[in-house]
View 1 (cartoon, rainbow, N blue to C red):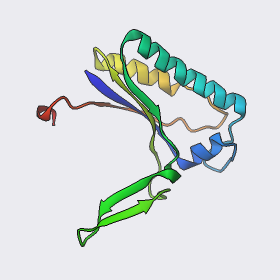
View 2: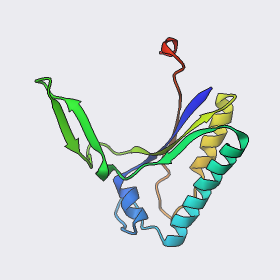
View 3: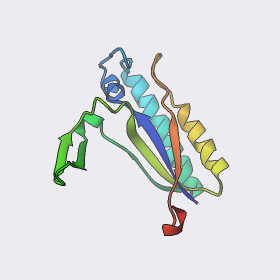
Length: 137
């Protein structure tokens, strides 16, 4: 079965990774940033080698996002980020094809152990099965 494994993050986390500390996130050093990239890259490499990896991408910061919704008049309302009312957004993801929920949970647990600076928020990793046809609603 295919699963979406979502890594969560905030705008403050992205700013911290650029070296800008805030009350919500510490500044990352270049060494900490490279350790995080290496750790996440190793997970991707392992999943590719096992044949479980379907796709994986990191996403740009929420400030570069655009939200499109319908207003009360039925016309599109377009808003550029960041969105102060949103605390966490998807920062990156893997789509994996795993034999079981237990296996994908092992993968998500490994993701939660990603290195970072002292005081960094440990955001949850969200697992969602990918719908396989209309019968899975």
